[in-house]
Image 1 (tube, rainbow, N blue to C red):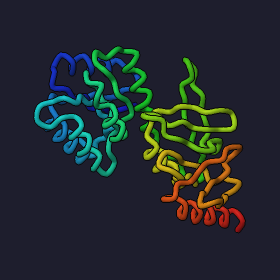
Image 2 (cartoon, rainbow, N blue to C red):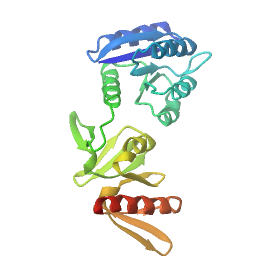
Image 3 (cartoon, rainbow, N blue to C red):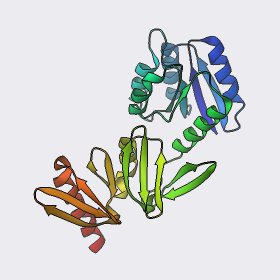
Image 4 (cartoon, rainbow, N blue to C red):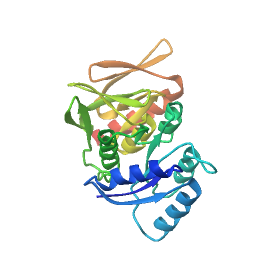
Length: 246
């Protein structure tokens, strides 16, 4: 069950959002704040008092401390709650996902769209797997949910606000940033080879140096390594495969 905070300076919008959240069976508690400063004070008090806060449903255009500035401050917390932006403005989506938002909803908020945001928040709030445990990523496919094991992923590439996961069975789009996935999967042997590509070391079968270019084979794909990442990639792969051999 999730504990969340809804923040919006427009009282009718805040009341409607809180009403919809309170009628979702996955939500345990909904706190509200009518401006960014109050929201920040409430969060400090809640978290400082040992209360759990899983997510913030956050408007962007607010007087004083707006939603994007508040989100940056929240990112400095030891264990920051997840962010879901709820706004009438489409143009801030890129900034929102750079702040690793779970979702970005446009007003007026539809109940079914909010339910999807809660599902994403719930999935993002699951505890990280123990070392050696294979994480599973839920992927929505036209009304169906497919569970993709981390170990099945050959590589991941950034696609705007999404990441495309490539496996032997096909590829799947997941809404998250590549930077967030890298932090989440670095301990599982995933290596950044390019600003837009993350590969699984376990699936790399060949590293090739040719004419000043560095490429590697992952599954059945050949991928280029950027010059910036070449040395680090080689060292990480050698360490990983030495560990397997030993």
